[in-house]
Structures are given as structure tokens and as C-alpha cells.
Amino acid sequence: METGDESHGDGGAQGQNERQRPDDERGHDDHRHGEDHGDSRDQGDGRDHDSHGGDSGHDHGDHRHGDGHAHAGGHDHGHTHAADVDLLGVAVVTVSSTRTADDDPSGDVIAEVVEAADHEVVTREILRDDLDGVQTSLLRLTGRDDVDVVVTTGGTGVTPDDVTVEAARPLFDRELPGFGELFRILSYEEIGTRAMASRATAGMVEGVAVFCLPGSEAAVRLGTEELVVKEMGHLVSLARRDD
Image (cartoon, rainbow, N blue to C red; front, side):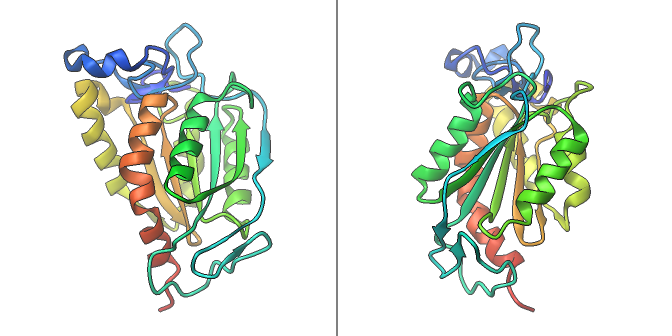
């Protein structure tokens, strides 16, 4: 739950009207401010109830990289990438104890933006706010041959059950502090100082880029459109380049 998740946090139930009120200074918490980059896990208490109840995932089929990586049994994560990867396989993970496969607006936004950028969503999962469960799922996803990028939504706030960052960070071979820094700068422009409550982060796990965003629809749209899809191909290419 990311109640204070940088106000781009969960609970994106207040709609885009909040973007129109820069003086409203609502947080991009993962659970509040429906447009306010809150985690779309609004339970009425403003907390980021991002965990879309129960580990449920569904694959979206095989895909092939533009660079010749076959994603459906597999591309080799050790391949040399001379240039940015043209087609990436993306796993979308919603961390929320209240969401379901039929009610996952923030996950839907990520999938929409990824596909609009001509990449492929190869699987979507909904996980409860459980540190061990989230970490286990991230390990499994980053080990799949058809996954180049993992984008999570929810669990990046400051409430006791916001555990996504704690689950992901120990797995990083290389952390990408610039991602969180840039995200909070962009959030500040929309919600003011509440942006400091966001712990959005990113890193590389054996050549797979992992991005952890708040739970609100506004937050994930901002982060996915302005940062993730613009740089994920370059990051994956660099991480997999042969020495």
C-alpha cells in the first residue's frame, strides 16, 4: 500500500482534475490521488492498497526481438546488443492486496503505454503486499527468456505494507538512482513537495531492467511514458553488451 508513495502513489482515484491543481500539492502516493500518481489501490483510507489480491498472472504469448532474440523460449540474456533493442518483452506486475485481474487500472495503463511504443507485454501478474512473495516473483520473471523488462506498480510508499522496494533492491546488480530522481522531479512539477514521499526506484537484474513505480494511474502513466519506454531499450542493450 503506498499511501504516501510520493503522492504518485496508490489510490489514483481522484482523477485528472488534480493535475490541474498544481497548488493542491497532493502526494504522488501509491494510494492516493487518483491522478496524483497515487497507487491505484484506493481503499477509501487513502492508503496504497496496491496489492491486487492474490498472485495471479497471465502470459501474453511469445514474441521476437527486433534484434533477433526469440522471446518464447528464448532469447539469451547474454547476447551482444550493438544497438538499442527494437522489440522488448515486458512483464507488468501489480503489487496490491486489493486489485484483481479484472480491476487493475494501473497495470492496464502500463500495458497500454508499452504496446503503444511497439513493445510487447508478455505477462501480467497481481501480487499481494508480501515481501517474500514479491521478491520470489521478481526473481522468476527476471530469469525468463522472454522478459527483458519488468515494470511494477504499487508498494513504493511509506506505509508498513509498502514492500516492493525492499523486495527489488537486493536483487539489483546495478541500481539506477537516476530513475527515481527523475521521477520525483517530474512528480514535483505536478504535485509539489508531496513527491518526496515516493520511493520509486529501478535497477538491472542480470540484464533485465526492473522499474518500480507507485500505484496510481497518474504516476504510472507519467513514469512509463516519460522515462521507462524512452530508455528501457538503451539500458537493456548496455547491460547485455559483451565486454
